[in-house]
Amino acid sequence: MPVALPHTASYYAASVGRALDRPALDSAVSADVCVIGGGFSGVNTALELAESGLSVVLLEAQRIGWGASGRNGGQLIRGLGHDVSGVERWVGKEGVRSLQQAGSESVDIVRQRVQNNGIDCDLRWGYCDLANTASHWKGLQEELQALTEQGYPHPMRLVEKDALHEVVNSSVYTGGLIDMGSGHLHPLKLILAEARLAEEKGALLFEASPVQRIVKGSNVQVFTEHGRVTARHVVLACDAFLNTLEPALTGKLLPAGSYIIATEPLGEERARALIPQNMALCDQRVALDYYRLSADNRLLFGGACNYSGRDPKNIAEYMRPKMERVFPQLKGVGIEFQWGGMIGISANRFPQIGRVPSAPNVYYAQGYSGHGLNVTHFAARVIAQAIAEQDSRGIDLFSRVPHRTFPGGERLRSPLLALGMMWYRLKELVG
Image (cartoon, rainbow, N blue to C red; front, side, top):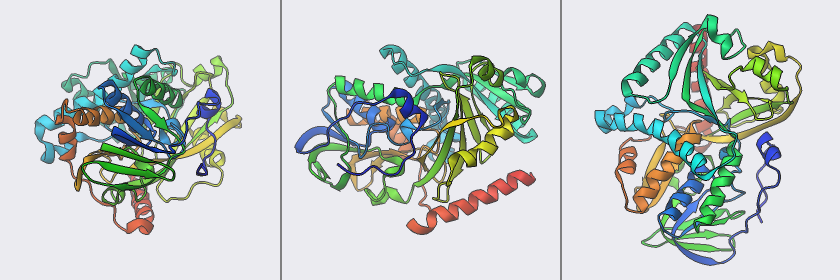
């Protein structure tokens, strides 16, 4: 069994207890599809394919939900994480409208999966974008207008600064935009439940089975240390952990660290004094803060996306000043959990979903850029529909958008992006 990569224990892992151990692959097996990666993209692709009647083998290097899927902020937010109007030159006006709709449909996939299967993942509806500056406030007004024109089906409203205390008890914001079609949940509970559903539908899930190499062809062979999968199709759902498994994709993705702290339980009264309506919240800065309450009334506070490739020595010490800037009333509160994880960043912040050019039976989904909780589910459906020959329009649409390779190669890629993001932060401060 491989040694797990260094990873700090999260509140999520502690709150679900010991999850089911699945075996490592130790033999040669065959399937219609081999999925590589046990995060939201991989697990949901396996689930969708199994529901279509195809045989599926999923290989996870560590454990199901071990990466960002089981460690993220738990914010289920509309959209693809990018202003999709910027890709109009490649997809056209109709394509932009389809992508805008996808941003809403992706949340609905999660909504329906939770409801239809009775999944207990602490799902709560209500989200608020927070403006730090006058320009941010103007942007939220424009966002509301755009979503209204698109026919966004869920209640939304602007909140002026003098009424913002009804949403968040902090004085650092100039206003907010409430969206009742977005919300928050316990991501590890969700993915573990989805994995069980995939297995119930017939998918075979293996843990502790890192893929060592892939041999492409009409039947693709996927090798682990002690096993082999032969499949007609392969899905690369590794995101930030792709490494060099597929060289055509590696340079188009930058792994970046993101960090979260969880306070001691605050009690319901104190917790609701911070966030009266139990919404998820996120500001609009380049180095953004995002936070919410857990089901047991802790504040989960995250952000500080780090592009340098070096993690803070002490996450709690690094994140506490950010939390106390927003909530000075929490000064000195106990922090019981601190953890980080890697997310995959694309150069244009647009998700990368498609087929490997040299091997059309090898599919991939990556580069969610911090918006993966909902978009992973949409990517899984798009890829599953294409493989099952039900509908290839979705994957064809995403494939039209080109993705740049990050400059600098493997060693300089992260430092160069860190410098670039520093420039944007300085520009934000002086602007």
